Image (cartoon, rainbow over all chains, first blue to last red):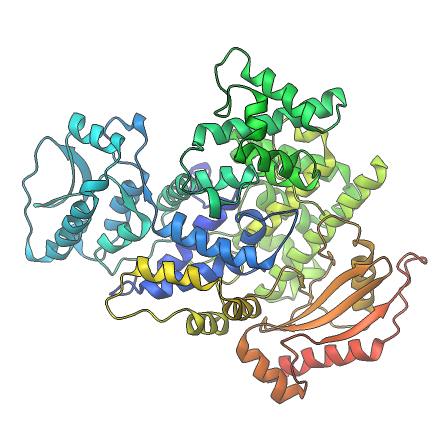
Length: 426
Length: 205
């Protein structure tokens, strides 16, 4: 039972999880109103991304590390909000076999959160043919959906057309009501379909997981461009650089890095050529090019090599962001990493069980430090509260000061631990 | 500290990378308020006005284009603060001295942000003490005011004109490497900055 309860908690393992959670907190207030205040939602999202006190400017948005600029943060937050998050129409993956994609599943889940009872059984599914029917209360939803389908008709991608031909028409069904649903939909369009007001979203971790999946899909191209040192402002819509090519470039960078570490090779253009040839092997093309010279002189290749080959270690920090993999969400592996840190710097934890618990539960376990409505934080745990009550350094602080102190202490330990290990290396 | 988030290869073999990863994760799990009202109000006032019936998509595109406008950008920068903001929580000159020492010690890092152990920020989040390492043995301290409302606060309550625009309160030479002792040549100015924090705290209750 406890295990099940733990699985139901919202956890933050990477920056996209955090963004999904913050977006959720924003939406929770917005969607409980009778009408969606679109401007307010946009302004709040822009402020969220641009605020340098939050982790997004450094961890989510593109920056040119050779010429760091505050202006880029503002430009990128506008770009991210406008062309990725809110207005970008997510295309279905080819392997969905007719099932609705994550954005449509999110629509379905949010739809069911409406206060109106008739929404509880709402479902998006395919049927060979559609028989539209609208009771009075469904009229607005039906009209919004019809408008979206009409707008989309001329712009449907091949995959969407293929899915519709093969598996039938997508439709939103709620009780006896039924209307055609669009094959592709943007986040903003999805919000417009919802029958507001909704109930609170926070108590539903499944919804939060769905939101993370949507953010992951929306973010994919932006993240790959960022990882390749290519400014999304110039490259987001240039489809000659495919997702596959971008992934190849990331692999190229990782391979070059590994070769450099293993064989002690200089981090230069020759290393990249060697890595390119090794990865290309007997394939006709790699990263969209037949040979390294072609790649090197291509527009993207030139920027990529300039950004990474000669600007270490800053380059490394950008490219490493893409190294997220299965391990990232594996709590046991994360715990192993934290235990290694504790072993590395035991004196920081010996007399501070509060910090020890925080490192294990929050940094490894992904629980937020302090929770929010419906979100469990480490500070809400009875076990953690008992540790705090028994420790004079923390016992008399109010929640806000306590959170700040724990954050400051953790930062202190991390900085000291990092300095200590660098000192040992040198 | 350079930031890395690599979990590939075997991170367990690289303690430096593990500490960096922990720093990133700490930043993520600390849930801060979504936005402060002053910031939102100021931002909304400065975005282009949305025409009646204008589709939100079109308005968003106009907002994005507006960023090319230098004046708009300057305002945006002031509302949103910048990368060198250091948040500090304690107020004693001794703490400041320690932070200054750390800031100076960090100036060789590739990321120019001083990394103090204890953040200092006025209670309402409007005032920030900013510390930047400028060259080998000197640093710059600046009291930064966030949001345009805050500028009026600074003018009226503290009698310091133009604070939000530029003014740095103290430039302090120090020898960060002489046994860890920082020599503050202009401690009085630092105290003045701290006094500003106190005033704001009292006013804001």
